[in-house]
Length: 88
Image 1 (cartoon, rainbow, N blue to C red):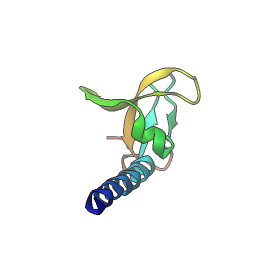
Image 2 (cartoon, rainbow, N blue to C red):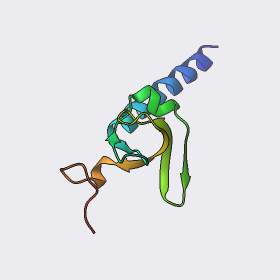
Image 3 (cartoon, helix red, strand yellow):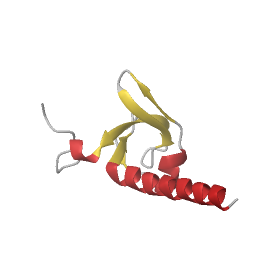
Image 4 (cartoon, one colour):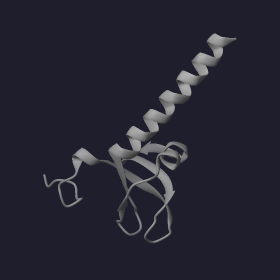
């Protein structure tokens, strides 16, 4: 019994740590208005997400335009200092 509780607790802690890391590491770009934004860790962890030919996305509401969209996922290290992806 205690082993099962320990395993469940370890999985929960690992999930929380992963969600916090992911929320700090990635930003999202709205397909409607181009706004780049972050998500709180819980919303980042729980929102529907997937892959397509253009890359990763999350289905979220843009905080600027209010549009529900498959926002592009952008790694923060892939961005320049002004918040835009680096030029090729």
